[in-house]
Image (cartoon, rainbow, N blue to C red; front, side):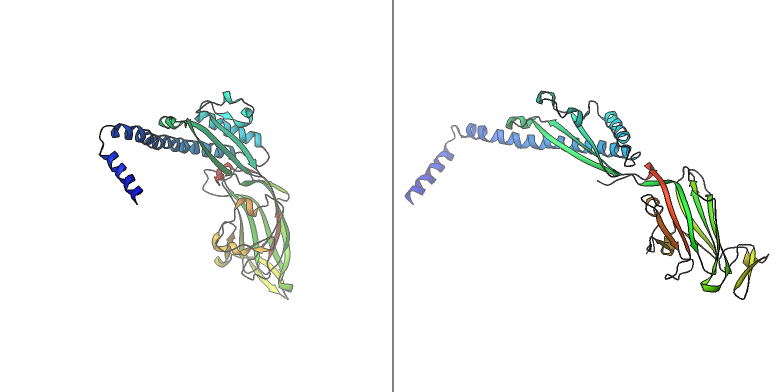
Length: 334
């Protein structure tokens, strides 16, 4: 107890002594204050530079991703590098500088690395930002780094549409449609028609594809399949007559025979559940994406139900496509 009292008294005496305390406290506190204040300033600069790097990385990966198809990495890398070097003078590829000596690594030099896995392109960027006040604490630089990744979906360029089976009582026509950039109406590239000839066995008939074989889609902004359905079993402008289950089509001028009864489209979320892909029904409310439902990865088997009898589809066909990267739909994924 006496020892504590002596220690307390010594502290009180030291606090009461005005002769050198301020200078001593200043000598102790000022460097700490300067380091703290300097840290706030220097880290603020580092955060600002990190934001700038992220913008550059995002722009670079989108530029490269716009042409990347999973096989042309060198082309995609060149596009990304072009963007980086346009935004930052002296940017260095890590692969070309990985053997550089420590003397060659200078403060403020922006370094980047471009890589790819499958169809995802990634740009990583780092920079060693010099400090100012933090040098008091022997901290001469702060490292900042960012990463950006982009996926460029595949877009069908050529398509082979092969009907394999058609059935049912209704006349059906499937149209392959594209919308060109700047156009207001769709262009018809091909059709497949089904004409029932008998109502026996749930409806059987013939189908014709025009043209047969590969269809070059060209440049377009939207690709869709449309099914036009006429319930009486004959095309527009005709009226069906059924005798002993046989279907005969005769010309008709009646207004009821001049239009289809219903229309389905692959890009219409209201009727997307009429389409089956590889045996699985597409959920309602889905707009068929280009790369998912048109055979970019492999041949797909489609079945389309014309009226809602989900257990027995009516129109069957296969779709295969030659696809390329679509820069229009490239998107950041990281």
